[in-house]
Image 1 (cartoon, helix red, strand yellow):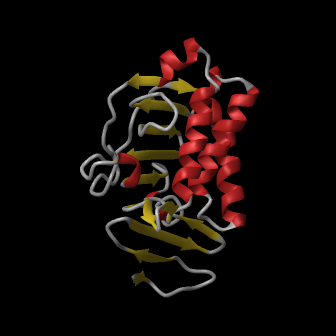
Image 2 (spheres, one colour):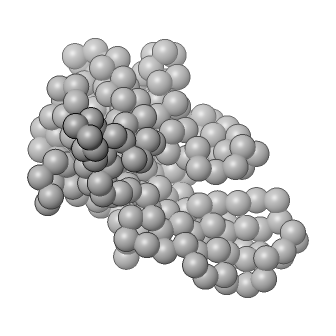
Image 3 (cartoon, one colour):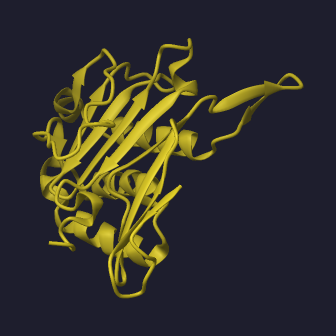
Amino acid sequence: MSFLGTPSATTQWMMQFGGHHLAINATVVGDNVTLSPSLTGGEPVKILRDGQVVTIIPQVPIEMKAAEAMLGSLSAAQKAKAVISTTRIDLVLGPGQDGKTLQPEGLPGSAMTAAQKTLFLALIQDRLGILNADDLAVKMADIQKNLDQTSFAWWGPTTAGSSAYFRITGPTAIIEFSPQANDGDPSNHLHNMYRDPTNEYGAAWTK
């Protein structure tokens, strides 16, 4: 863990917590906090104990179910836009990719029904819910404002319970969910990213 600057209620500072499966960059400027960029993940996500499967990172299956609910809500025409490939890909904007952006791919919010937008927002909030309640509310309001310009895209199998990569790309949020296949079960090894391309490391507040 590192601190850049001195923790303060008025001046800018940053806390960095670094690890292979958890890398949090929390930039604080007055009342504002951003966690962009941050990586979360884990291995193993679940273990076998006394003959029973025990989930030790409970947030992962929550996100997976929310993503499957989002995909399952789509019509055939919508799914044709959202599913870019049935082959899973790796992180695109992972560590070392600061300052880079991606063009939106997949199904935009403008092509979703009201019910689908609700599922979409719930999926986004599942990732950003590590923020405190006040800053989460501000961030989600910003994302909702830009939801029509925010896209949902999928790479990998589309059957329930399969491990697939999905990405959410919007003006102020990019989320990647990336199962890793190098240890057998991709659902048991995750690398997931969150970035705000307009405010990495609080740059929008510290100019």
